[in-house]
Amino acid sequence: MKKVLSIITCLAPTVPFIQAAKVADGSRPNIVFILADDLGFETLGVYGSADYNTPNLDRMAEQGMRFENCFSQPLSSPTRVQLLTGMYNNRNYTQWAVLPEEDKTIGHMLKEVGYTTALAGKWQLSDKGMFPGEAGFDKDMFWAYGFDLEKIGFKLKFPKKTPENYYYNEKQPDEKYMVVNANTPSTTSRYFYPCLIKNDTDFVVTTENDYGPDVVCNFALDFIEENKDRPFMLYLPMMLVHDPFQATPATPGIASMSLKEKFSTRTDNFKPMVEWMDYQVGLILGKLRELGLEENTLVIFTGDNGTGRAITTRMKDGSVIAGGKGLSTDAGIHVPLIVQWKSRIKGGSVCSDLIDFTDFMPTLAEVTGASLPEGPRFVADGKSFLPQLLGKKGNPRDWVFFHYDRNPEVAASNPEYKRARFVRSQEYKLYDTGEMYNVKKDPLEQKEIPVKQQSKTEKSERKQLQKVLNTMPIPPIYKTPEKLNVK
Image 1: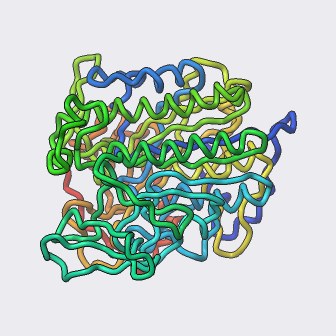
Image 2 (image 1 turned 180 degrees about the vertical axis):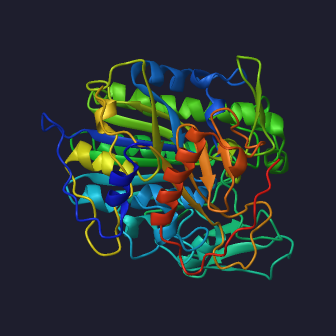
């Protein structure tokens, strides 16, 4: 914790505009950023999982660098806003499924230095917010909610809860999408019979035999092929492996299954979903290899939050880890991070430095020679970890900060997703409600360290972590969380 005060200064709201430095040899690599949905660190073989076969990601780690301490937000939308804008949620998160229109993203940043950009997969940020095209992506194909369909001119035919309901396009009568959940029509299917929009405006007609992750993966592969001769950035936020836990194209008998059978959800489908996700990562890596782009493409793979709580995973050391999506413990925020850049990163490297999702924007800025966003709204919360990727010590973090509030406008915390503010170092974690835990020994926070029983070292850590919390602005709308009382 020796560097806390200097880092606090860097995080103050008055931080100046930062000019990112180019990679030493002036090269400009392609960027592929893959974000799995609801995938905790424990699900990959290279992190010690005994339950899932992930040969492509394991090989990616063998050829690149694996990070042991990458931390996301506990839920999808908060993580995605943080990732795309490089800022902690206390600065710009307004509500679930919204990317504020005032903010500049990684897409905007890379377009300004000549990158062609694309998004393929799950967006989930356009309810009162931006579509991908407005957020800096030249091309896109994304899984659309009902509210996304309504933004491009669709209407719901009948009132909610009506059987055989559907969305229809008044201008294109042949464009319809059957509601898959009568009670919540906006909840469309991401898997079989997917609801998809292309390039912000075009409805993609699908059938019950189309598998959403495959459709958008093919779009991503085509984008790579089309842009093989120019610098590109592909952001691939995967639909997998979020619930509902449904069949995949590899499920035995899938060709003869009815749509109702394909829609049935069972936790034993999670394993093949993880393995199909890994297969798709293999397709992306294979395309780069086929086109001779592998050496000069920076590929990042991570997850947006912990694994769903219905899933438990056996580890090779005999332990069992329960998914903790939505929780502020390590089960909800500890995610895999694997980075491959064959011409620059030494294969088989392992890094134990702390990483959080504000760090990706400054890292990509330094890799590409781009400049971080200007303006009074932007604060440079992240730190580039390019030096670590290149085998240098760099300037690693002493802590990562979390402002977690799924629904800021709701008076009371959702009991399933309790709001929380906390700071975590390599060993300790302090909440703004006063609880402190040794998360290295107690990652599920079952034993609070009482103030009166803290050692000299623990008191020093608490003091330094509290200094960090004190520098982090609290949004006016934020409601003080109840004491956690985790036992």
